[in-house]
Amino acid sequence: MKQFVINSIISVFLTGALFLSNTLADSDNNKLRIELDGEYLTAEISNMPIIDVLKKISEVCGAEVFVDASIQNNTISANIHSLPVEKAVKRIVSPYSSVAVFAQRTNSKGDKELFISDIKVYESISGGSNVQYVNVSKSAQTEHKSQVYQSPFRVPPPVPGVHAKGSYAEKAQKRINEKMIESRIKKIAYMRSKASMEENRVRKDITRLKIELSRAPIEDRRDLSSELSAKTRELYNLQKRNITRIQNEERILRQLQARQH
Image (cartoon, rainbow, N blue to C red; front, side, top):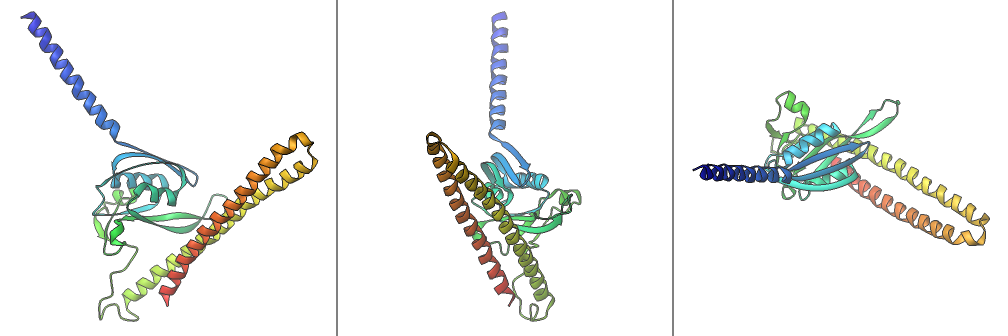
């Protein structure tokens, strides 16, 4: 009888331990860590609903975030390290699409800077149109505004007699386009300034290495030549990348400007 009781206790203990082990394993499969360091985002995400991930992004970055109501409970996984916020969000929500809206503010030093004010995430096949969004931002939760509503990034499709020339809807669409154009122009200016700073830094290194190479003894010239070649390649790749990025932004800007006419 005593042996039976002992065996029962052991059986219950093992069953409980197995249950606890499974629970911890399930918990370990869900992970959400997002950190912001200046303009760069690091994230470790595993099997988390998109809506929870975007709430965390909004909390960390301070942006208003909107998610397509039809995908808000779909789970995603991502592992990124130190990427610019806009690029990081695109990687995190892949294969879904995302759009970031930039605005300008004055920082504590009195300098003007660009920041991401709004982010929206939607099903790629929908193209972002005719989509109902949920505002997952902290401000919306506080004010009980998390209900589903039409995207603030667009106005409804034209309706005869309603979206006629000079109508409220047409004016609203123009204001949205103007805001997007203004934001894109500021972003391009910021990108040009940042690209110039990055390239000048590498050019200074190249100039320094050339001077050191001209003065260095023969035995040290091989290492300096290798370093100079590496810096020259770095400058070439940096210029190529910056030109491509800026050209892409300018192409989008031209499309927005054409839409105004």
